[in-house]
Amino acid sequence: MVGCYILYSEKIQKFYIGATQDEINSRIEKHNHKTYGSKKFTARANDWILFLFIPTKDFSHAVRIKRKIKSMKSSKFVHKLMQDKELLEKLITDCRI
Image (tube, rainbow, N blue to C red; front, top):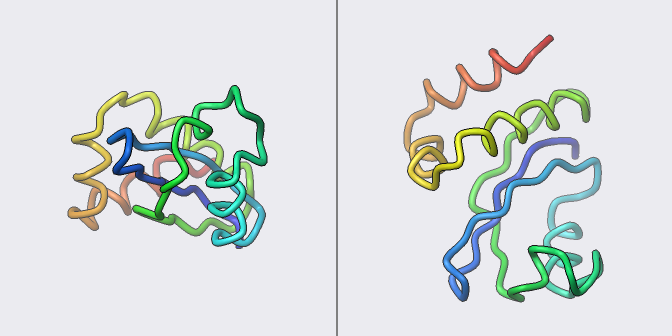
């Protein structure tokens, strides 16, 4: 399923924002097993869980959403996305071409 995803690690108390064209559970497993390399950000922990998944119609839309969320540089914004469905819908709409 194509979309933007937000993972959370209790171990390092950090979020990770990504975009995928793969099945999300497989993607999380790869992050937890350091498949993407030991120097990558997600290699710092092995307890990544899905915090939020935002399905999109295409990968480029998922990447635009990911970039917008990252540009906010705020865990408060990430938490608010989870709680405020109107904010989430606005983000999805604003990131369309």
